[in-house]
Length: 431
Image (cartoon, rainbow, N blue to C red; front, side, top):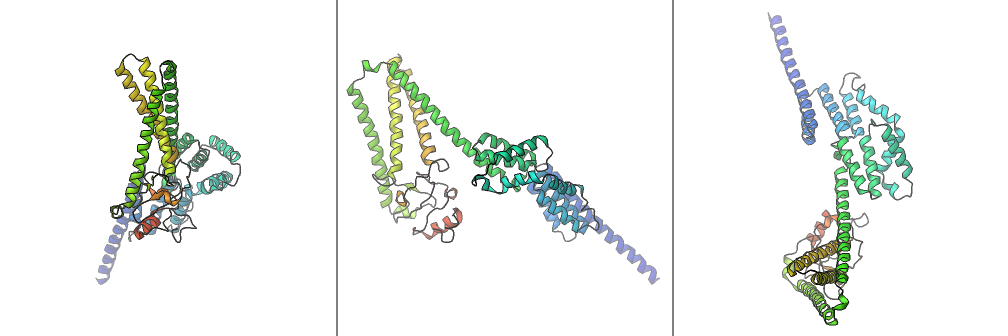
C-alpha cells in the first residue's frame, strides 16, 4: 500500500514539475514572440526590454535562455547591423544548448562564411568607419572607395551593406558633399533601422543637416545681397543722379550715417561699462552666458565694429534703392512700399551673412581673441572659449577647451568641467 502511495505521489510530483516546466518554456517563447513583434514595429527599446527582463527570470532553463539569446542575435543582425554582437550572442546561445544545434545555426554559419569570403571588403569598410587616420595621413582613399562602390553595385546582398553605405557617407561628408552624405545616411537607416544602437548615424545626420542648413543660409544671404545690390545700382543709375544729386544731399546722408554709427558705438559702450559696474549682475549670473565686451577701443570692440560696417552698407544700399525708386516710380505709396521691402531684405541678408561668418561657431573662423574680450560679472569672471559665438554663448557644451582657470566662482568651474569637452592635456586641472 505504501509502495503504491509512493509511486502515485511520484507521478503527481513529476506531472506538476512537467506543467511548471512547460509553463516556463511557453513563457520564454511568448516573450520572444512579443519581442519579435515589437522589433517589426520598430519599437526596439521595448523589444529589448522584454528579452532582457525575461533573461533575469530564475525559472529559465538552458534551452529557454538559448532561445532568447538567438532572438537577440537575430535583432542585432537584422535591425542593428552589428554582426559581431550577433555572432557573440549566437555563440553564447550554444553554451546553453545540450547539442551542437546552436553552433550549426545557419545564420551563424552564413556570417562566418561571409567574413572569410569578403575579408578584403570588410577591411576597407572597417578602415573608414573605425579609424579617422585616412583623413589626415595623406593616404589616397579614392581608389579604395572605387573598389567599394563597384563591389556594392555588383554584390547587393553583401551582409554589411549598411556599414558600406555608412563608410561612403563619411567620405562624402569629409569631401563636403553634404547632399550625397545625407542620402547615404538615409540609405543606412533604411537598411538597418536600429543601426544608431551601433553607429552614430543620427548624430552624423544632425551634423550634416546643420552644416547643409548653414551653407544654404550663407549662400542664400549672399545671393539675396548680390541681387539687391545690383538692383539698387541699376535703379540708381536709371534715375540719372548726375542731374539732380547734390553735395547737400550726400552730406545729409553722411551725417545721418555717422549719427547712426555713433549711436550704436555709444550704446555698446554704455551697456558694457554699466554691466561691468553692476553689483546685481554677480547675483544673477547665469552659467553658460557670456557677453561681448563692446566698450570703445576694448578688445571686444574689434568684433563689434564689423557689425557697424554691415549696417552702414545696408543703409547705403537702401538709400540708393530709395532714390532710384522715388525718381522712377510715379506713385509715392508704391515707391515707399518697395523701399521698405528692399531695406528689410537688404538688412536681413547682411545680418545673416554677418552671423554666419562671424558669430556661428561652427562656420566662423576662430577669432583668437584674448580673455579680456568677454566678461560675466562685476568680479571679473571670465569664461574664455575657442570657436566662440560672440554675442551670447548659449550652448557652451558645444565648444572645446573653455578656460575656467582664472574664475572666482567654484560652481562655474565645476559646471564647466562636467559639461564642456576639454582636450586631454587640459582635462586633469580643467585649465
